[in-house]
Image 1: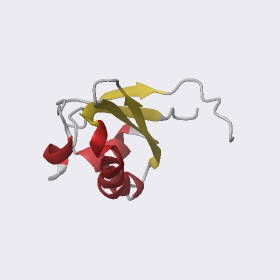
Image 2 (image 1 turned 180 degrees about the vertical axis):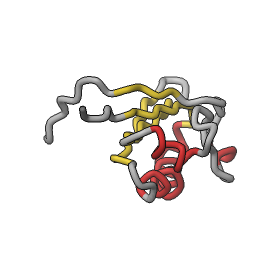
Image 3 (image 1 turned 90 degrees about the horizontal axis):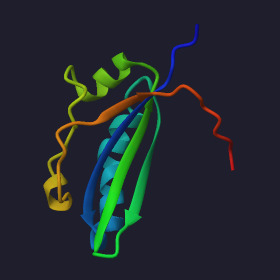
Length: 110
């Protein structure tokens, strides 16, 4: 039996004016850490600009196992992992992430 992929989802908000700088920052912190962890299958950064100058941000990371997530996030892997400069950008720091088991995967290359 094939083990299911696990999706780790984290979400917060930033100022829209910080959009470009924050994406660059995430790629060089969490993104590099995702990519450098065995069992990470990739990640995505999603943005949605709101009309009030706020941008919603989500990171989705894909994992081969819970053990791989623990290697990235630590034993208490349900907690969000933050970096030293996050306070410069984030308007909220949720304490937890959510994990989902991927049951159907029918993504196609563009």
